[in-house]
Length: 382
Image 1 (tube, one colour):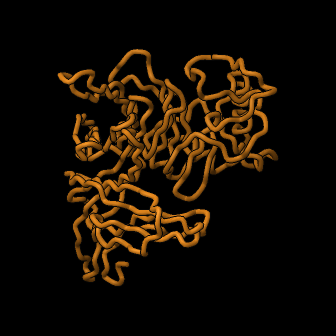
Image 2 (cartoon, helix red, strand yellow):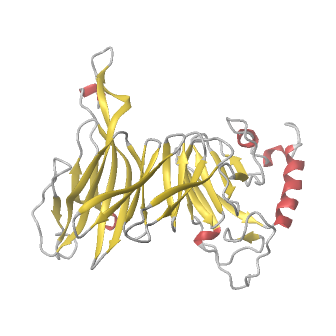
Image 3 (cartoon, rainbow, N blue to C red):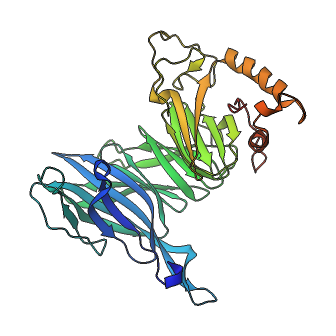
């Protein structure tokens, strides 16, 4: 707390959600060190290894006019720290690690008494900037976002070394990373999204490469992004703009065009595929995102037996705690609803139908801060 002149402290904890959030392991990081990213990394070798990767930022301490401690907004570096999460066969004494290099373990007396969990320190790397994003890639690679650079690392479990394979600089600082196969989607502060392709070495004389394939034509500060299908990526920015870009068949440096977008009017934090309400049957007008969004493809699936799947809808989370759902609808349904939306929005404030409209919200969602217009989206609150 600044009032107590105590710098903030970040922790890594292993919790049991089925037991009221019981803490089973805990790592305390250095003062003035903030956690920016977290990822689970599974590596296949002679046996399967499970690692917890933590990206942090190291910040300078400064005092304000009243002499109270605060963190400088400009970081002086960062760290990538890797832990091994193990299930202990025997109960261990409760121990909370006071340093990131120590091992933390706690007993599991309340879970059948079979043993406990242990967070074992494995490796760390100091970087020039904060490690803001992490994403596993394949069976043994890890993509790390440090400042404006995407770095690919590989863990050699035999020699117990973390090898830096390749890196690619981007034009603006990275904000998020997602992986689909060998493709990496990097969200950035001013260039929406970038698509990179990882090409692993094919022989001993070859080397790993990370190639920039496509970038968006418009600039927003992307907070998160995800694949909707093989040729469509959706993202959210810090001003509440939800968008999707279509991936062209040929590589073009600025070939990612916006295929739909809507401004929610509040800061967004995450976007995921899934649904909030369990639907017994998918409505006829709702189409799966896996279909080519840039064409008028018809859905040939059996609507009577087709249940709503997590990949059929997109859930957007906001900083204020709200959650929004987006689904893809048929061209016929969109045209019908668009005519209805235009007619309703034309009503004046004194019209009897005005209570049916989300007046203030619709105005906020009409235009993005950067001037981007909402397109190809029906405002479901009308």
